[in-house]
Amino acid sequence: MSVQIQARFFAAARDAAGAESLALAPQSPTIAGLLAAVGSTHPEGERIFGRCSFLVNGRSTSDLAHPLADGDRVDVLPPFAGG
Image (cartoon, rainbow, N blue to C red):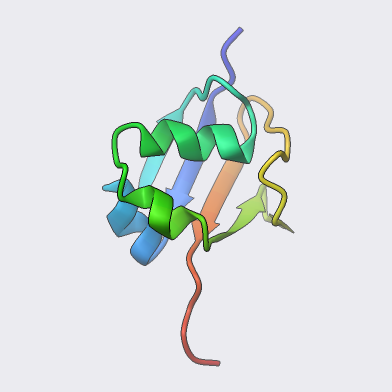
């Protein structure tokens, strides 16, 4: 069974992903697997995604091995300047 994840990208991460949001079914249902799926078609994203923070269903995590379940929403947030 395939796990479908909704990913939303903001600021520089949106530019790197080539879209504001994507519905993906990563081979590995983790944040790392999700980023690898996006990176397979947008390799420039690897540079940006490595510095991003993540929200899974509104909860912050920095763990790239964080497991994802069908229907999860992942927000990919690049570092922001300012305060």
